[in-house]
Amino acid sequence: MQFKVGEKVIYPNQGVGVIEEICMKSIAGKKQEFYLLKMMSNNMVSSNSTVMVPTENVKNVGLRKLCNKKQLDFLLEILEDGSSELNTDWKNRYKNNVLRMTSGSIFEVAKVLKNLFFLSFQKSLSFREKKMYDRAHELVVSEIATVRRLPLSEVEELVVGLLTESYKWLKV
View 1 (spheres, rainbow, N blue to C red):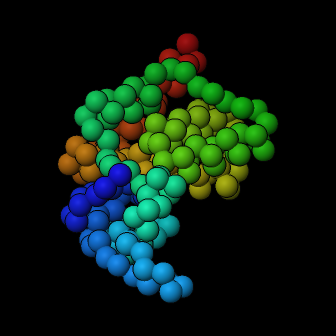
View 2: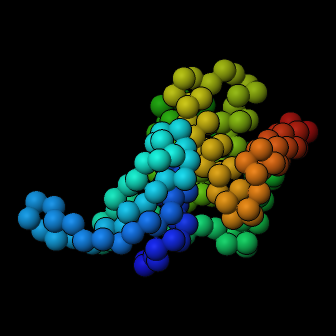
């Protein structure tokens, strides 16, 4: 997949970034082409940070374009449907959630967000699950806000509203 300078992309488990530059660098004596990403904002990396991704490694790291409108509609459907995939075994649940978070798919991240949201009503989330919930929440909200060009606060309200309504349907 090819990206252009100035294009907004998603770097899995990191968030929205902008391709600032496509440059050649010599690493261990080998010249490689890199995308230089400026991360827009997230908690794991400061908003002023940059990340270098080898252009030949884009598929492996899961770098992708933002959702289009149709994909965004599907993402919102995932959040609002009343289904859940709660795994009662903590180790298996955590392992599955880690795989989903690193998959590069916003749909998988949305499922993690929803499952942990639902689980939080049944019991307190562990420290690791709380961090994962916060990260999934941030990734989903930031992608929706970026695609729709809306303030984060407005999208946060939308996402929490959809999850809350979804949980009500699950309980019925």
